[in-house]
Image 1 (cartoon, chains in turn brown, yellow):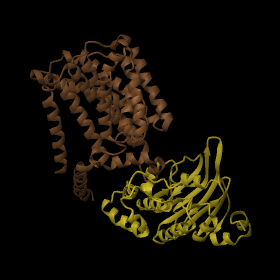
Image 2 (spheres, chains in turn purple, brown; image 1 turned 180 degrees about the horizontal axis):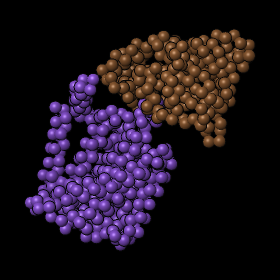
Image 3 (cartoon, rainbow over the protein chains, first blue to last red; image 1 turned 90 degrees about the horizontal axis):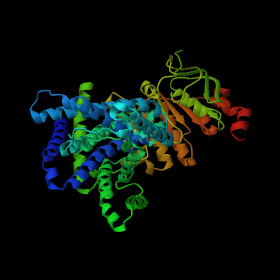
Image 4 (cartoon, each protein chain N blue to C red; image 1 turned 180 degrees about the vertical axis):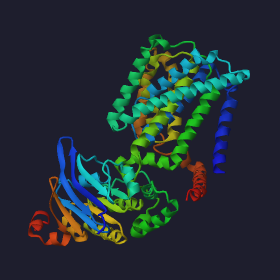
Amino acid sequence: MAYLKNFGVILVGIVACVGLSPVAPELMNPYLFSILMYAGINITLAVSLNLVNGLTGQFSMGHAGFMAVGGYVSAFLTTEYLSKMNPGLPAGLNEIVLFAAALYAGGLASAALGYLVGLPSLRLKGDYLAIVTLGFGEIIRVLILNIDAVGGARGMPGIPKWTNFGWVYAIAFISIITVRRIMASRHGRALLAVREDEIAAEATGVNTTRYKVTAFVIGAFFAGVSGGLFAHFLTYLNPQTFDFNRSFEIIIMVVLGGMGSTTGAVVAALFLTALRELLRPLQEITRLDFRMVIYSLMLVILMLTRPNGFFGTKELSDFGPFRRFKRDALKDAAAADAPAEGARG
Amino acid sequence: MSAPLLEFRDVNVHYGAIHALKGISFSVEQGKILALVGANGAGKSTTLRAASGMLPISKGGVYFEGRKIDGTRADRLVSMGISHAPEGRGIFANMTVEENLTLGAFLRKDKSAIAPDLERVFELFPRLKERIWQNAGTLSGGEQQMLAIGRALMARPKILLLDEPSLGLAPQIIEKIFEIIVKVNETGTTVLLVEQNALLALEVAHYALVLETGKVVAQGPSRKLLESEEIRKAYLGD
């Protein structure tokens, strides 16, 4: 039952996002709409990076690299093959199936790469891991810069504009639910144990390498999918988009939201995406581009006043009226576990 | 006589160029407490880490119930029955006492037996029960050490490896912890105890090893070692 209820929540969420899809662009001007779309893509990026950096405690700085891989793989598939294909489904459905396949392929490619990079590098800790992942992100960017089939430095134009509001927010929603479900399980507790004390985690029987790599791979998958969303929204890809500044942006969202808080990652992704745009009118007054200076200053002030980020390690379910839901969720989890254990013996 | 529960045969460990254990051999009998004593850097903790699979050994062999276990992953060893309470307690500070303890049973398949075991740990450490919802980081040093031992016990180990359980604790608390170690041993759990406080360790242990710069320099029933003039001079400050 609990399983069905969760499935129901996911279904309702996705249907709501898709249902809003044709309405959303009508409600606001195109500029506002594009900000909303980038914010949604950033939510997926921040939530998935939070799984690695915040919840598992492995400081990765290569998220833009995974995003690039997913973006390029899915964009290459759609422009070269999928947009010319016709599986013979009704008109609207064609595009949906093909886009889903392309996004999935991008995510998988990114996850596979995450596995390859993660397996050797997650033996490293702290600063060393950060540097290795930073280097990895740059390698990806330079490699793409030199692959002529995807346009190299000229970039990759003519990607079909398949991303819409429904895709972006449905996927953001799925990423949030995925991370929440993981964290509510014993696997989630193992990830937290790795973050808290790796030696102690190992001593209690957690296969730390496996859990770190798994978190890394799941993070890479969602980064790849959001890369695909990004590519099919902008309809143009350029390797410069995925430089380390992009990785830092996502890290800032995670840190500002609170390392280890999914709620924080979502709020910070929305807030920071909006803030950069809200500061734009300032430029017209000052006649100089102080926008990024002010943006950075605000980050400094925010971190000084709230060193643990907006939410620390807390979630929405830890606050006032929302607490009830958490208790229900715990009860559900217990109820779901009990019969399953009996069956296992 | 049956095979010893845990056996080290000529075990060597290197940290890079440093030769930390230089051929250590000993065995721990089922149901006993074995103490490893010695000064800083003698290789006591290294021996424990080699036993729990956290360090690769460079030569020799570690045997558990007659099976060679060196090179086996640490999490496998936990499910085989080797539980390690690492030095400096190593508790999960941002998790509650209960979460810490249930993580101790992470690998167990017999989920229905976990709740009674939790009760047993609370019987040993009533203080932990009072603080069940508290974050482990807010516990006192002694309580954290209790939690580390309790968590290790939650894996239902055949052998419990304790690394410096007295570290940084008040004498009164240390006494309590050692009383509990004896109690745990009386219920059938074998204990391998590393301790700088040699006098205390020798008092509770059945058998003891004295390590010095990676070698065993003396061993025997702990009562004999307590009586030995040399040992008293070197390690007990007489």
